[in-house]
Image (cartoon, rainbow over all chains, first blue to last red; front, side, top):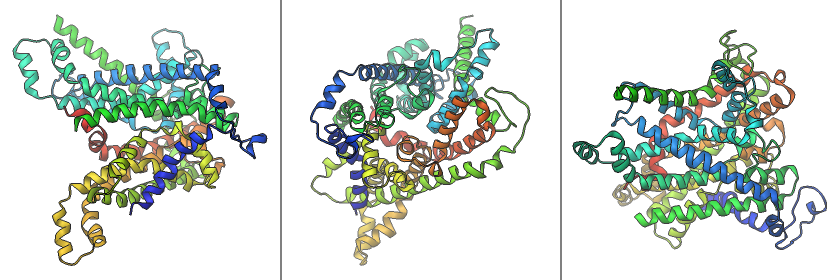
Length: 284
Length: 275
């Protein structure tokens, strides 16, 4: 009974990871003499990796991308939205519909397929696009967003895409806080800010930590959206690890070395996943 | 005074957030209903003519290919997950904990970390540049979540229901088909919807696996159009039809989300939220 699922999983999920680790010790390529007879070349790929400035550049850019779009952007904005639109707390009291609207838009962004997001954001950030139209309304000069501020562009697009998840998680976490705890603080005369800072936030510590861990894992793996928007350019300025791996493999046809680049992402995500698993495991 | 200040501040924050989430979509929603739209937003030349044109020529093929990939993915994911979940829920066997651990751990490997070996492996198996190969790769990535959710679902069905049938002479297969399967319906529907959406919206798998344009689904079509638009100028792309297909592209994930979002948070982060 378990055979079909196991086969599918073993071949197409476990398989590539194992096959990939094997590949890193070869010189497999799509063109050239190595394409026909891939040879085992030991640790040469790893040695090349350590001395490759473009690789270290991509590690740094991936880190900035994750820090900006996942940790600050998605988690921060998600928490803000979850608190502001919380039904129980009514921070936007007369604008209950406004809260619903913001929530719905945030979800809509989250379910949008990634190429459609790319499609919309490319035109949104175009020199003649909507963002510059808005800037002109305020009398500001238009900007070549994706050329001048490539990293900022892909970070903004990725925040737009992923915030829905964090908001959903934080909303669930907020609802699970017992009503009495907050009422007690109110009776003691705490202001809304004090209530949030000293009562709600400490209770949210665990969900925040778990969420940051999860979206960090996911954001390290983000490829399609930034690839479609900037393709790693201009120059190498938005070349994340995933994009560098793709380019090495499919543009320069060095399958083995490209895999070695992406092994870095594999190790980062597996490490974070193990931390996540231990955290959840300790509870049960 | 202070109170008014905070109300005004709230409105400003609200407006900024709504503008941030709404403005990238305005162009999509207006251009889909315009004749020969440009890259900026205008409210004129209203037409519904873009939508019928989606279902002719190249774009019709994109829709067909996307549907094929999504349906195949959903069927394979549901079938495999259901079959594998039953032993996990009902039997004790050696390596059960370990295999569940590996399943959950593999869930976190992003496709982009293994895209080159996936391609290399698919080429080895002669599955590259086929739609079924794309669906296999996507379906495999849905298996861990699928098994996990179905396992929990089956475990919540009292074993007494099955035992009663066994006493009456039913075999295990019969109870699985007649008792477990109908009761698992909602869980399998959720997995089916999620896998459908995964296949429908996928970009990276298609990008690495497909090389002939006849096999392109919507995601690849939009990608191709965006490349053409940015490299050869905006006249080369029919924005009206592209935005119309974009809107159509958005409908299945939206509907699926309405049905599944209750399960989403429960599914993976229950342990994180509960104190």
